[in-house]
Length: 208
Length: 154
Image (tube, rainbow over all chains, first blue to last red; front, side, top):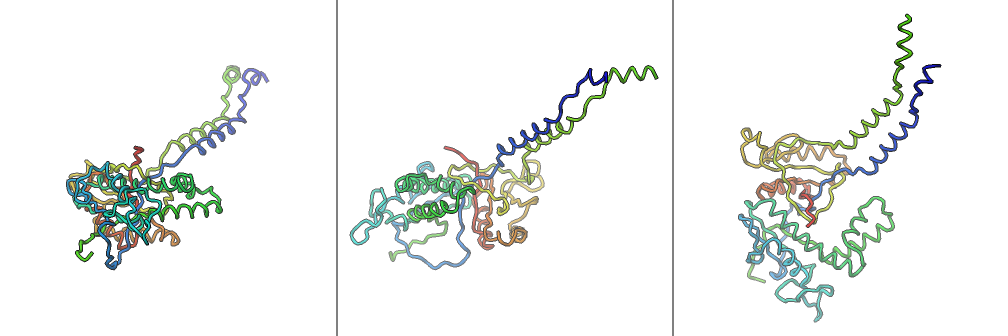
């Protein structure tokens, strides 16, 4: 009896609760580190038939072994590539039955450049001795051009940012109904500026 | 005996009831600060930076390929040419296909059409080796790739 009076035991019953509280706090706040990167889709390994293209619908980008960038045979710094690509994609110079074929393009409507974004192809040719870091930078700039144009159209049509729409679409908590709506909207924007990036050899021909 | 009685009266036992909780707390602490390191790298892996990146989640459908020069301590063994590392081993270009086929067969059947290859290439390697890997992937019909890079907010 004397002992308990001298040293009252610390109440340990709530210790477990505190520990659980901490556990739950960390569980909620911890995010698992994920890798980031540029997604690309390779063409399937089949012999594709030869497709004839108008030269004006192709933007030729060459990355040479000294990591220099040539766009249509002119040296362009990598930081300028985004703007060059936007100008090319957004040109909308093509005519269909007397009217412009791309109503939403805001470019120069230069008849020497691409007809419309659906026809515009970016051809990237990189030397085997180019540095991978520069190659990814070029890919990044091209993505940036497409994203900027998609963003613009998404703001104009739906008053929403394209990247937030995509994030929402892939988020698991989004309901099926709103996913269906988002899917249509995302596909509409994507079809306005479809990403057509070719890394295949494109031959010159005199017939066109 | 009298001395014993005196001793027990003055030095009471410390309560150990809270000890498990302290241990649990420590456990949780380490659980939260630990990051899983799945592979030991044999190659340099300075990823390039890009701003338009997207997340690469769903680890179960990702195959990782590392490309880079051998680490400094392995230079004498492997030379200075860039190497391909998959899983825990260094492979040559011709053995890459075998590894990838193995890797595909390990994945559950319903995921096999959704596999993504994460290309973790050092930014100093040449494009040529990456192009060769991409050709291999094309032949195996692994068409979704991801140039894994560090997010650069600029």
